[in-house]
Length: 108
Image (cartoon, rainbow, N blue to C red; front, side, top):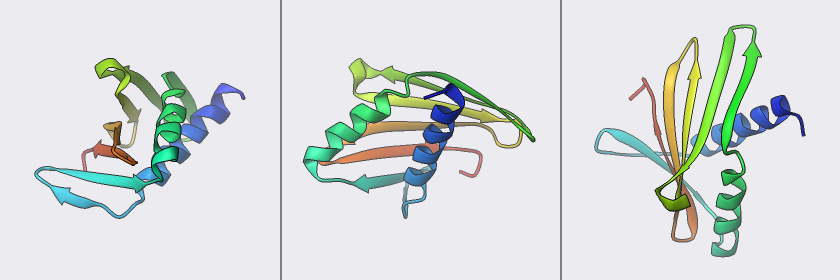
């Protein structure tokens, strides 16, 4: 799979995960995707394959996504930057029988 296609896939995954109804706690938003426990670990392992830096040129400018594993491989940290939205950060982790993500952006 070429890098542009994988980058688009990564954005689609992140977009799909962030479109889940959210609950607000403290100063950030948490969204969770429920998955059977047998699938949560496999889903998280698949997300970890996004490790690295992805770039895509769009009509509005370059989008850069950097995925890094942290905390002994228990969290995937995504830095996404674009000329129109600035930088956003999303953290993906396993939380029991689900994949949990916490997204931070200029929208609060």
